[in-house]
Image 1: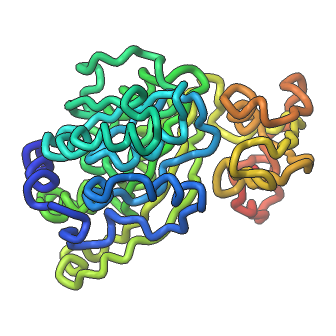
Image 2: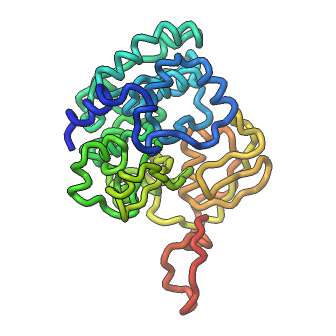
Image 3: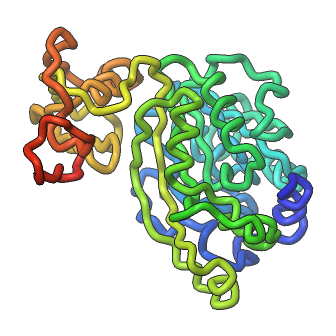
Length: 348
């Protein structure tokens, strides 16, 4: 599939989210109250041109520099601009002129609604596969987000390589996208409607994990996931027997992350100081840390907290001086397991 087909689908065919033929590019996930309050101030035309599949607003954003890949009409850019505050900035990149026209048309409106959006928001026309072509400084972003767009990219690995280059050390890519349970057949991948509906461009999940690691993001962490029910009998028949899911991942730019969850006898204590998370902080879908409770972690999780913007919110116990092998219940292969013993499949 080429850029022109995707641009036509999102610039000409789709005029609002009601024109979508499936539920792949929508967000039924429960939305936290603080995000609802922010979105209530976003202009109605921007909201109607939203085609995302997840929530890409991680916690602790004040003062952050954020890049939105495939920002469309700017819904997430404007929401994030309110959360980073006047000292932060949000940059949106999209290849569809019609979408960017809507985003830019309402910049003054959001400057009034939020009080500072005109100075902390900017939009660029460009391709997320060719981020090097844009005048963006390497290592200048704390967080890179994307909402159901990478599946539309013609070169997914190039997107991740470019994102890695633009992130600061300790920065993260936090994004939602659609994944398939197997590799998409060639004839399906060339179907313009299925591609535009965020289905036939979806990566096989294991291929995504491989290219993420190849791009420099060790130990990808899944935050949320849900199955996609297409709810269109005609298109369901065209994609069968493939199954799809929407998932949010966070990828950290931390060069010392290891391939497996290694045990160094470490633990953390969450202080409860992250805004909108006074009692519990969820790093991913298997690390939910209660305030004040000692929480054992593997070396990778330790680095994801200690060497990122989250460090100020935790107490850290231990170091890397003694190695105890693979973290218990990590699910990795262990040649020292008793024959017949099966790992539980959990992870640190």
